[in-house]
Image (cartoon, rainbow, N blue to C red):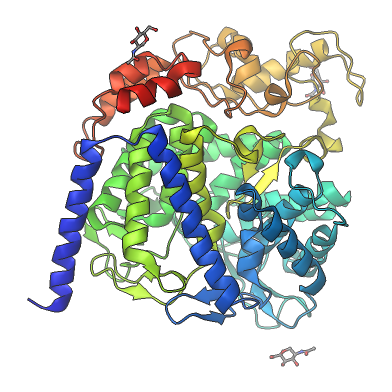
Length: 621
Ligand SMILES: *[C@@H]1O[C@H](CO)[C@@H](O)[C@H](O)[C@H]1NC(C)=O
Ligand SMILES: *[C@@H]1O[C@H](CO)[C@@H](O)[C@H](O)[C@H]1NC(C)=O
Ligand SMILES: *[C@@H]1O[C@H](CO)[C@@H](O)[C@H](O)[C@H]1NC(C)=O
């Protein structure tokens, strides 16, 4: 037996025993606390390794303990880590990182960078840190902070604007920060590349009162959407001059994924219905043509003929997005299927062939991606089903065992041999660790700005926190919707002067299309809990105004009265009956989750959230 095979056999045995262990005991609240601390330690192992060996280069080479410049050479990993530091409550490192970046990072550099990566990692990182550092109510306000990061963000975004000067409005994939678009720049860009810019640019517009950033990115989305196929699918690559699709494979993974994500999230953050209408159409088509319960395939965007029966690891964000949309039952099934791939190898390979049920050749790596963990977090938040904590514990065990290396965490080059690669993408600290920490913190009794801070946060696709503050969520152009969901009527809106009872007539329609599965009367009843609530409504709590609360309540029992809502949770609630139904469906995927022997009891008592934490501890200890 070769050493490699012996190692593989050992790993198999290791994961088998992990599985047995997970079957034997459910994650308890006190274990969730331990796991949270373990994840914190993971963060600092990697962050300190970066600061010591790589800073101010972009990323860490964690095996050889060196740095490398991978994007623009401006301390990318530090910028990407800012809001994770704030989330962990590390005032000292957050403060000195913000100060260093304000003093040292400059974007007037002769570098050609990806518009997409620069937007989601750098612009997103700077904006989220700015919004935390400038605001007392986050608890992380930095004394003497003088909007340095906002100025940097604005400068960076201006340098990317030349990329949008195309006939279609869809931007070039890359831009030179000093000289604009390079002469021989490719005219081909991905759908995700053109359609994943609206959150960051939109927030920037609202903070700077300069509409240009929001306009160009919205225009880019319109440019893509206008070229959708007759059956409402988009392809993977498009020519930004001719508008021709150069790669016509439609899917929810590689090259397209966050296009869908930003349609819904731009609506949630900005309240701009145009994005919602696009999302509804796009989502309906995706569920009709791409979804082969529980998997998703890639099809030709015109004919809907399947071209790739492939799971690719980027698809794993989708169940999390479905939670935000309130479509939880399919999310549960898909997550279980995707997690079964993780269980099989200890990691998800970049590609897994659904026809042969084996790793797709050439796609054997796991570069520390967050997507499956992200969906695990959202599903735990929606269902409070402790199986998701078990899944999270498995993922921590795999990463600790397989990916931890001398100065940080290493990419896994091959999920079968678990060979390590000398690279650590900045998103490991921005996303992977963040979602793990949020998952266990939520189970342990959350104390962080996401779960019980002053605002609701929308996560950008790099997991940066964008708060639904009044300034961001209530821009001038959407004033007509102010007060939209106030129910007491007669309140006159401060900005528009339109009475809310007049608006309600319009907004019932909006709610109807949102709650597409509900009858009008149900939609009316669930006003205060089913939509993103905006406006100045004196009778609503802050949580309700800016909370996004989704009931997947299809049984007409409106058990989510405002008074019963747990203010400390993000109020994503589903009815008990649905949990049980979907759990039943879920059983057909046997062996993917350890069965919680106490689950029925826990579910029975889950309506009594106040005591449930106590109950769980009692049951499980
Ligand atoms: C930018 O870099 C390119 C290639 O490295 C070089 O040809 C060009 O002259 C540089 N431009 C400026 C303004 O420095
Ligand atoms: C509400 O409806 C009225 C007429 O039905 C229309 O004039 C008005 O523009 C609508 N307002 C919004 C915000 O859609
Ligand atoms: C559930 O609640 C009931 C009544 O509140 C209680 O008698 C029962 O012991 C609880 N079950 C568990 C598992 O704690």
